[in-house]
Image (cartoon, rainbow, N blue to C red):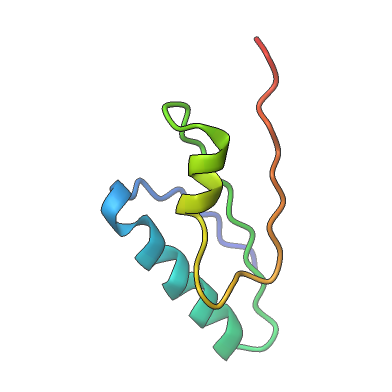
Length: 68
């Protein structure tokens, strides 16, 4: 089953939400999550920093938005 979720998370809770998702993934074999973040008002380095959790997510891929 695939469940698509669009989460509008306040800046102060984004890291907590990512940790929750990472923990759920680690505790339930067979689960796999892909997280996309869109924050046009943030620089790319700031977005990568905001998405960082400890321990780390298993894979981070940065896809830069194309020029309009």
